[in-house]
Length: 449
Image (cartoon, rainbow, N blue to C red; front, side):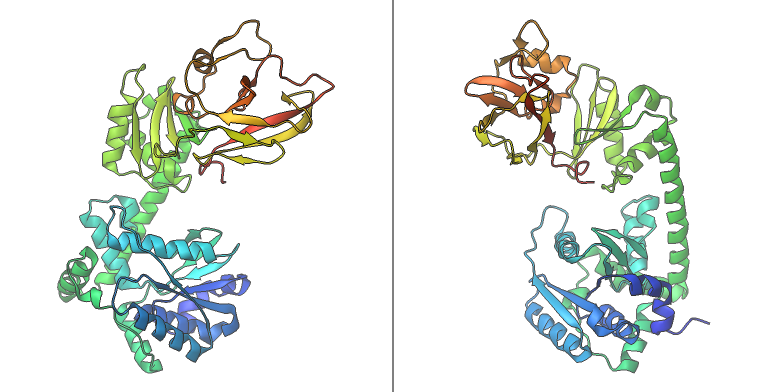
């Protein structure tokens, strides 16, 4: 016999975490699922600890009415409401995906350290998600469906209703005499998920009444398979000399070549997931294998996908969180070295005062910052002869994609330092002199960890 839906059965697995959380946010659309979730929470959590979050996407003519309903509903429960209007900008992934991205951005901005965000996804949402990913040709990650909990920004996302079907939520709502809104777009089968909900799932339910439990079981098995694939990738990466790099990570291609084909593909898929980045699909993985890994050694191949870049340099494969769309610095910038300097491409320079090393520090003197124009020459400290900057950068093993972006520091027209690679001869601090140790920080997911 199925458990009854009430605050004890729904929230008891999460109660300890909720009691310890410094902040409890509840995604609140005003629909059936979020209304039931909020009502259940008020049964066991003091209302002053709850904050409902309503996102006005502005995509429906009824959006203002829905916001008014959300305000009235929360007022009736004594729950604080945060309403926010967002601008949904489609980026090629579809309107639903753009709205979801805008919504989650609000949630992440609001979440405090160790805060909890609760969402009202239920078992029918899980069915639609698994079927949707199945028809897209997804692997075990997609077929794992919606996770009951996961990390998000500085906190944790929890979906307490994931084991309960919509019909159970509706029965509870009727018993509590709750009022909720219906999004008219849910009836439009032009959206893939709506088509599944309105046309496919009813047919499945008629044939297999316990379809939700069956699909949930398959999703759990897929999750276990995905966990195993990740564990294998972690072990394989330990043998591939995987290491952190500027703006990303790299691995040894000689060791990678010794893996079986299936483990190579698994490593490429899971590598980005280990760093909380999007997992590439089979088409991207095949491109990496063919266009990057199997390219000539003197080539400079790259694959760009969802803000990630795979490239090859000196027998290593690189996974980078950089973009070719970064603005180019086309002017000189003045840097007072006691303060960080933010560069147009999202990177920054900082200086730490040291003794006897780094760029010689002269009181009140600033430097100008440029990027390469071509034809620059330099003599790194300790060398006897100058050489072209192009040749010196090649000798330095700096990867090709950084060579046009590395900041060059000048005093007047004299090049005095090349990023944080080296100081030029005659401008280094003597053993008893103060100096500046320069760091070039890349605005990437690596540096933000």
